[in-house]
Image (tube, rainbow, N blue to C red):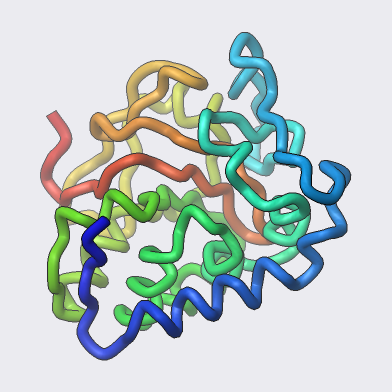
Length: 209
């Protein structure tokens, strides 16, 4: 996989941060040592819903969820969004992008947000990006309100922090849900201040059809 280049940061440092974060409490989950995290049944995936969009480990769903290290979901749930992303083994490229764009406070400070987190292969299409351009792209992946999967499905559209980029179009439900056409790889991931959805592609401002 071709690694995206971000001005002013090395991916090796981001990878080291990710490994360190994963090791912090990574063995405390109920999945047990060496056992993959099982995703809920597709028939009920994303079927729960809360008014404030807060989820629990039991609500997590998606085909990539079993790839997460044992205990990582428990650790992520106790961390703010940007810190939690750094502990997700699917998101090492996003970790580097957040650092390069100086977006840590944007993701860690709000009380309740939703983050659409592109998995590592999604960054292959980005190439080299300056911090200003990168920050706008990342802001288009964040909603100023916290949603779970059911809430997103009910809303149908959502406004991002990059309001000039236009609303996101949400179609389908649970395992079949798409965000501007991007598929959900692991959704309803709880963090201290956000609900995270790992998706399979970058969202481009103005791309909603």
